[in-house]
Length: 632
Image (cartoon, rainbow, N blue to C red; front, side):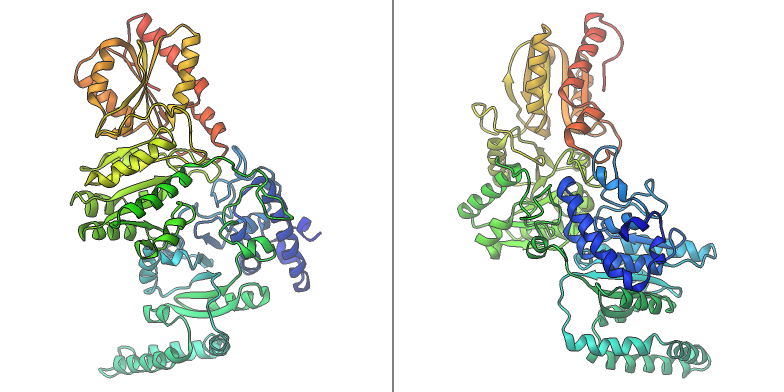
């Protein structure tokens, strides 16, 4: 096996050109077999095998720098840098990340996980190199999907002023370039990157620039004439007009061709974009036919591509999808917006039913939010469905364009709380904090699937900025009998007793049921309240709680700082109530990848850990009547 010869970075260079194809086949076979067991991002990695091999043949890692946009397509990169054995624990707690991590390898020069960042990061490394007199090569890889993000164009605009080399590889798996254009561009690429052409062009420009009052005009005329011709025959003139040299398109599965073109790109003094055409899911028929399904795959049967453990129960995204379709039927003013995630957010059905009222803006969360603000100002009822960790990219737009104007935009925040295997960049554990800081924002969290439906109806009728956050995974179907109407700023008492009271937010209500039963087994009388609203908190319920309980416990799947618990604690302090408050929340730190239940145990928000903390706090601050109020 050729794969066994790859033990560390640059080992691929020991292979002959005739062996590249066999290695690519072995990598694909390895990825399919491994990800079928562990789950992970399959389609994007199968499409980038040869591209990654070409980059590793061209670069000298870790001296040269390779930045991956998003980074979920870096599996082959990890294999070629000696991390093949790490795939046994891919995305498991304590195991190898599914994204580039600087702490994992010197060959991972920049941590990524969100989209449209690689050009900015690469440009920063180029400037750092130049200031320090370095000579290494820096390459940023970005996908055509990531180019829908505005940050990429901000970086391109800045990169256009470079006078030193910076290679940007556009990994395009949309296959939209026609054959005739490709043939002409290949011919022109060979001419434009030839040494004689580059030397002549630079020599002419230097000779004319600034030599006389006519010199600059001549240079300008040459450039305009050259551009006019290229507009007729060369794709990528958008980049050329920005001042970035465009090369391509090149077959992203032809390793030798890509290595050659990367070499040509390195000759250019300035930013150069190499356009590479790849096929997502290449080499595995189910992934080729259904690339979206295999973007982030659960463990699956290799023969059929069907998930090994199909989900029988509806998840929160499914419930949201159903509610959206019903609301679209009832209210013609309801419109839906997502940022390149119609499947992931559950809006695919709404799109099929109401195509004129559905908007996929691409990977552009900032635009999505301000666009929604415009829709709301125009008299519609926009619902913005975005994952929690992605919505934080649009904080300024929420604050300035929606909440400042008090516009009726509904934020449906999926994947709120711990999401598991994708790790730090995807955990939705900050939304309660960053949204709570914004005036005019209102925040809700449902305890179960029925409450998600009720809260959606409340939110659409609300008339101001409001966010509804719900977790990833199977929707809780307990407490069906507890379905009091949703009232603004009001919580819901589920069990009303004495001694200890649990105020639980959203997904933590289910945990609260377990905690309550265990506390009862230890002789504690325990109330349980569904917080419902995180902003505003139900101050009346808290006032009543301090009158009849000896310990208040808040529970939330969000970081402690700025979350629900802090609000309750501040209120209790403000009214001078002599009742201790114990905040159960995620520590103010990034949470790595791993199974959600494992992560909950590690950070102390599982039922066992919570009961232990409550009992300890109760014994220390209630039974002994001393010390300060407890906190997790």
